[in-house]
Length: 354
Image (cartoon, rainbow, N blue to C red; front, side, top):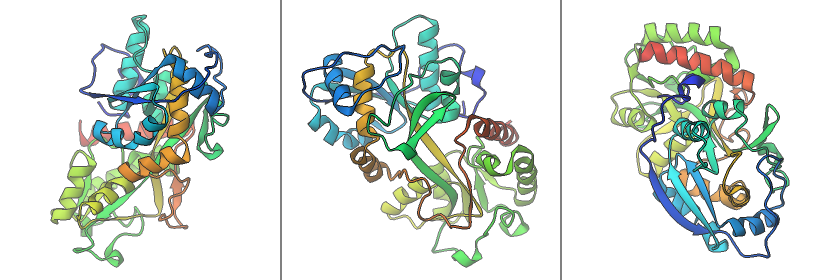
């Protein structure tokens, strides 16, 4: 199921996603602090979260990151905080949401304390008031990363800019389209890759609105006859091999990762630039709220962000430095904007993968 599926799809029969669990030891020593009630706003300094987290002893954390990569990222955390065990599970955001909702409906203790997710996948959690409101600024998170989602705070873990990827050995920058409208034309017929989930094109609606986005997409599909390939890695492989000239399924981090592996690929930004943003959330009813706050405080710190950039190539700047200053930014950070993006994404997905 796409992360952009309708909200009620997550409130169904429970099924755990195929995931890999990893046990990591971490968090520090201290005199301890009184644990905060899960029904109140969690307002702790990093030291207070550290102390109270030590008493709880562990945190259950879910994210999409590969377990082996995550283990490398949190090495410095585990060395500095040896008394908290980070029990990590790799899982898609939509599946993590389904797990939480199913456990709540069954009146089971939550197996998840905190997770990294996108706003669309997390919408049912916010709607059902299952996200713990946290004073992230007091926890040391930079103010520019904090987002108020209908009165509940969360913070941005990364911002991965979206563009089109190309093979610089086969195509010159001067030959590439400068705008999304220029991408529509016989020159690109059967030479452009799209993802059937619609997640890389639906985000254009944050800048254009849903009607204009769908008008553009239908013209693009009819004219360009794009190749439908699921996933960033496979789509970039088509560009590297020369089977396609461009892929619209391109994130900055995926391109950098392929470059590090020696692949001839680069990213090119058009006149509208969107992104894939992920956010850290702490759940109401979490068994280890203070330990989770301790971990999230580190994860959103300069050190945690540096580890993420090192191992996942994911930055977290408001406007990625390589994005042209003339580009229109389409970052969906408001629920209303996200709803428009979700609608456009679902429509594109139904056309590409009916």
